Image 1 (cartoon, rainbow, N blue to C red):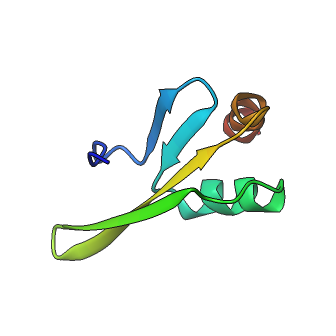
Image 2: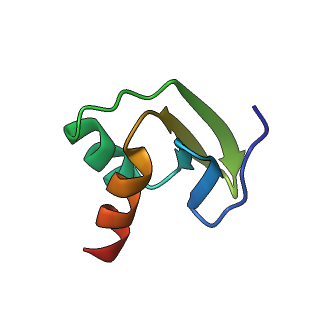
Length: 68
């Protein structure tokens, strides 16, 4: 998978979300979604990991996370 930008949050396709925000990833985990993949890369001498989630209803969970 290609790395996303450095903004921390990204949506790839309907029902598929990529995020490097650990709080957002933890929220999806607490809602029962398991990451399909985790990719890491170096950015400014640090390691940034992207969590890739897919599933039915994930878009609603993302809206809930971003509005609360």
